[in-house]
Image 1 (tube, rainbow, N blue to C red):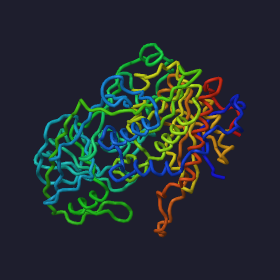
Image 2: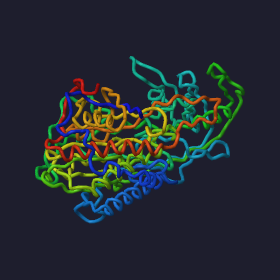
Image 3: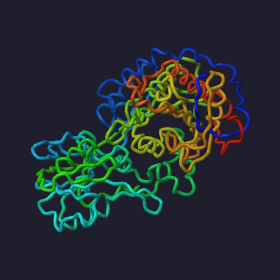
Image 4: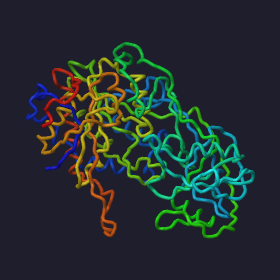
Length: 533
């Protein structure tokens, strides 16, 4: 039995439909189709798809072509352009190609991360690198004129919360005429990735700003009290969802911060005449070293950037004014930890599953309810596309019957570990839904075991859940033992087990089929009451 781990809510029994009755088309989920879709989605050049990038638009076009071939109706733009696309605006901040950091005569590989001061002014700085240790006042010269400060990034705690040695020291350096600071990240686990995902820029990776009014990044949503009620808009009538003030962007540092990779950091530390002993203590090797360098940086701001959600409609029959949403992430996100900013590596499995579920549903009997198939972009950056979809709905929110999201299924379909099926939208919304309860029951019919967890902190159906839509997610997250460092044959990222992926895709299909054809729409359940046993 394939063991699945889930994040589901509790309630009595099941839905009215007899879950032992397998729906038509269940065995038509095609393993070869899943393999073909994943092969395209994870081809070279799509290793980590950035929001609004050319690679992401290639994937979006692929989905649109697949949906069109299925005979599905475009449900995106009512204006010009690709009718399957729902477009939304972004701000893009990027480094010009001439940006560079030079150590001696060597220009560093552009793997470092830059957090700019928020301006678009050009910085051309040359001078001696000055090592400032961990930023103690006694290690700082009186003036950094003609100098480039180098400092070790160091984590710490303050009042029980994680803190770094960065902010106060950088302000003091600016007071002493510093124009930029280079941070040495000596250990992988010290890499300040969490703070850099939204603020850090690389030469090949910009930062994006989503400026919709009322947007609050889900990580901050748990601080809000209450929940917005449903609002209208889109097909079926009503107005737009409620809007508030804009979310705050991260406060930029007073001068540009440059974070080197651990390899670059150790190399520069050695060239500056320092080393780190086995205990982790700094040790001076040569006090007379003088090392020159250059920092050339300029950020640009593009306010006309955009990204898209891909939306397709399967028209229903008797209850065609009600729509079930089945979705996946267009970002193809699966955190593999290999990127300098810990951005997602390729995982096209959930999009592949979405396409296969859509195909089988489109080829089967007309469902009672309409079904919207949606691939959301901007998921890894903060659910940008999902927020836009909710605030500029293509279907009246009161008529959205439920939302089933497929997330990182292939991370679980590895032939090892277990799969966690998430059924809570996350953060301040703790409400489970009948979609999650029914998926839990249907998994048993497919010889899948589901274990229920209480919460999940993310997901593209989060904003829909905040509008009181019954939401759940089938989410893969394996539990894989750490590889034996001496056993090079072990692989931290094993390939997909497509038999397992097909099995999980059948669960997604059955859950969606049942929700689209039951007499009553999915419901929000509150906390668990025993159905997950």
